[in-house]
Length: 313
Image (cartoon, rainbow, N blue to C red; front, side):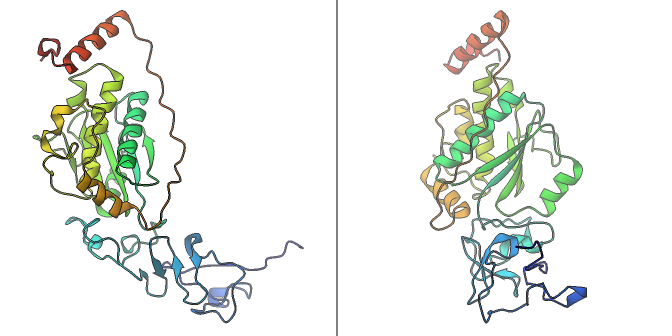
């Protein structure tokens, strides 16, 4: 061990290994071969995926990837990730929507959410995000993760998700109203634009002052829009996807029905995948209630219990 470089690795955009001598690279760069004559000292190659010594293919968990062809060697789940607004999604062999300079595909499937909280208090937004993740885990979707951002996404961020959505990930906005890019249709409480979705939280805020109820209602709306990633329809009788589900907005027990659960698992789980659940971020505590807010809480509970006079509208 003298600190000298033993080996260097560099790759073309789709993972083909760049050999020594190319563009001034020294002899310590790996030779570009498809089937090595002898095993390399490092098996983890392009995006840290294990490269098979016999075939030269990279193992991504759900399927194998060929850097020489710039595509997977088998298809993604059919009719689980295809959207009319995203032509590249119809190519079931492609890698990162044919945009490897911008994206990586960690395993071909897992769901990652980018949630923008708008004007919501942090404790409500965090609680809603955790409830949505729990609903997806209840459906059997493994290793769901999310990142919570304050405010609203900027123009470039919205453009990126509209034009070049990341496979198996989505942007979810928790808006204070229907305004945004794009605008939520006037007759809807939320909308999904394939890889990007938004919900109008004013529908919830107008019916309760209780932070826990507010988080539950927002989570049910958000889960509905996430569900549209695998179904453009509203399956009748599905507790979350049925159009009548908004009548049970504050029911914490709503979960996806069997058909939706199967579709979500097919889209996001890879064969043999096990749960590697990250720690759930703690939910910030709401501010101390005043006498007025305790009265509002009692009114909201009466409203949720079916007393129309207590609803105030």
